[in-house]
Length: 392
Image (cartoon, rainbow, N blue to C red):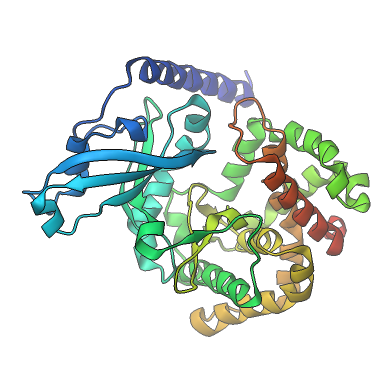
């Protein structure tokens, strides 16, 4: 019996167990009452549960009512929550608006749910030490047996008047520099510490890539390259068979160099702008250990229009390297950085082609128009940078 067969059998058992829990949750709609329970869905959060989780420092406070007010679905189910407190809760200034990320379906439990424990530990243990704009997490838990998971975070719209970015958002030069500075801060802190590999509860980028491969993203990518042909440069389309091998080759960067902490999903939709004009980074579901160029390439190739990326990317990469040198004493050769940036374009593309043609076991994560825009931007970068020749 090969290891691949063993892995497949283990995955099937896990999926069957979680599927049974999903079916049971859907049939019984259990309400979470005590802090030891992980709510299966935001609508399952009771006033007693909110009191137990949020009001620990205010013993006389009681939640009187919890209302789900809206949200959206993707790799996780995201909902806004409003809470009415008694007078003790009001006096303690407990939050009245929160944001919940949960995994109620089989698809969400097999995608975002598997990574929920690491995301929660990052938000609670590591995020407070980083001088970045990012949401505060009040609660995080995952039940390994059922696959249920839930993060309870501040509602950034209520606390910081945040405006979340989308494909219509034009990122200007100042905002692009803030994105660069945010990445340099995250990467620089952990490069300087040099102990990120001791955080074994964080997977490696290679772990993430190979897990995605087992979920069928290569076939999804191949189908999407055909479906999206109209927005992909002809030179890239003609060599589309080389993209998956190039992404596999680029994995060597992660194993052959010092690792840092990666957000790993720094596309435009995971950035927000506060009322003060600060760029913030949310949705840390793919946090992992790997080479800094992964985030740098993915961010610039998705947050910027093709024209702005072409005009600014060399300056922005130079800024990133200078921030690492000035603040953290880390020196990286500019030529090496440029080639690493080019090499990571393939992994960036493989984050978006499967959203256009999702594999059977993954949720439908993005609207088609968003997927097409991101594929167009990243494929354009591959063409502009002659990235398919980076390993020549």
